[in-house]
Amino acid sequence: YRLRCVKMAVPGVSGGSCSDSSWVTQETSWPTFGFYFEFNGQMLEARRKIHWGRDKPIDITAFVRSGKNTLKVSSLFRRPNPSATGAMEYVFAIEEVACVTHDNVVRGFSVISGGDETVSIKASLNATTTSVDDDDDIIFDTEKNTFTITVAEPYTRSKLCEIPVRGKTCKHRECFDLETFLSAEKRFEDVSAVDVWRCPICKEDVRPGELLIDDWITGVIKALKQNGQQDTRAIIVKADGTWSPIVEEKEDNAGSANARAPSENTGELMEIVELD
Ligand SMILES: [Zn+2]
Image (cartoon, rainbow, N blue to C red; front, top):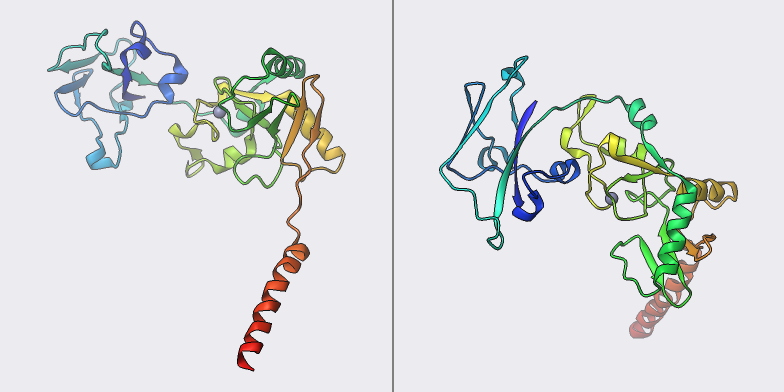
């Protein structure tokens, strides 16, 4: 169990509550001074940036008892007027940290069905050809009425995603590879750190229960592999939902060597001429 405090703009708190996803993606931020925390009669000391490198949660596991527990927060300040421009509030919560095994993470995600995804892709293209998409992974071509989706895993871009996933709150279609993500997490011995469950693309909440596997992209990747096109990094999707891989020119060593060769030769020749 740990006590955390985050700073939020007043409209984001909306009536004293915020969504789990917006809570977990906020960095811990303790008030600079004038706040005191007491849990079950035990004074707690905030772990501040000055001593810990950044503000950190307070581990209260040792003070938790069965039945009623009391957290008392005293402040020297008044709550800000919610209508004041730029008003911020400190929001406190006690989090229960649980462990999920690797196998359960891999087995436990929801699936976005291929049908839903195709409909949504068609809708994106047909709804407006002038829409501006903020995502880096999707590039709309309004003239051809197509768009491009990256299908390579985002860490190295050197291979296709094996298990393409993203978070429920992610706004992008691009996926990251689940196994690569799990192996890249910061670990303490065999257990991953608590606050690392963020989307590598957009930093949204991707805790185990928040992961979605993209069935449509899974199908695309399967087809690419069957066709021997595993070097594909992105695909072009048309308004009817059909797609084709973007063929990237391979780094042609021979070609670049040839390209470089003449200038090198020229250099040598010039040098010889100069010596003569
Ligand atoms: Zn994301």
